[in-house]
Length: 104
Image (tube, rainbow, N blue to C red; front, side, top):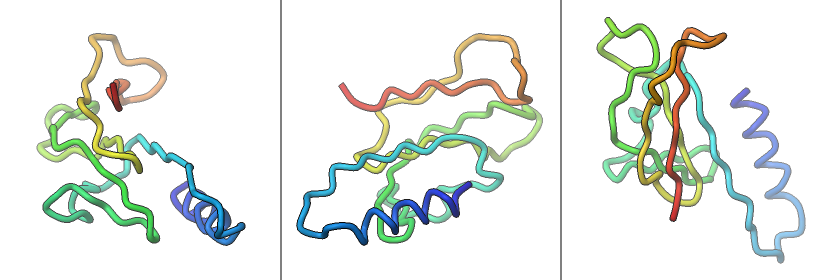
């Protein structure tokens, strides 16, 4: 999935470079690794030249006995204001949903 997203970003970058890029990317899900390890101290993650920001809050949506988490919301505009897990039962997935407040 990440390869498809990066390929689309690359394709859009090659379009008319005189236009202002107003594309805003939000990526969320279980990344199977702690994506924060790929960022810098300011929480910026560079994916193929696109800056993404993450929220520093530690949340666990799956496997509560685990100490690490791999569920993230990253945003190409700025860091989400908050992320949380709603009080719901598990649905079709083994993960609970994540609610992200992106911007006001």
